Image (cartoon, each protein chain N blue to C red):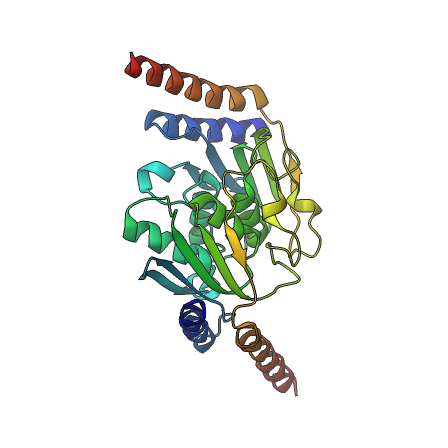
Length: 155
Length: 155
């Protein structure tokens, strides 16, 4: 089931790539029901907060009619940044499954670990590395193509 | 100027109190222009992300037509939580002024300090304690009244 939902998150990441956004995708599930499927839209929407996870949390809250996402699982292709890990904490999502590790912004152990901060309202279970290669490659390829295009435009 | 804008943030906090939300208010300013004035709306909107700061950042992005809030100042009556401190980092807001310190969720030193996390994209300047007493009292009073009402309803 974990890989099944991560594949759906990867489809979302692909949608982001197609519109020249950093390809990150996300799915929120409760039981067997998909509540939201989203992808990074920061440039398209011109919203600083429009990471895939924030959009997915917002959509899931709307779907359930509550800010309280206890019992939900979030699948995201890249380890969440501090904003998104904070939003996961605020929404009380039970389980976090991410794909690629992010040594720069990753907030579940790769850079710092929000679950090590004492006194917060909630601590989700976290598992990283689901379909790690695929999730990592889509981002690497995106930046490789971007660099190549930038270099060609300078010739 | 700092106290002037924090007074406006306090007016917003008051609006939250009037609708029985935890009274936290926020203002984002660029130069002399107020871009957004918001208050906590988590229960009213049933959105986990609807803290005053997130709403203010979203509104300011809309106003300026960019996700990039470099040169902006954010005033908020309570020290931001990890989600909101993360959103401030993502939006590249230059200066953070907060009122009351929050030993539980405060992410600029009272609990942990996001500015101590290495490798992030951006580190705003931060000053806490602006109109500290007023900002602290409005929250204390809110919870005191809530507890009193809860006890009375149990009689």
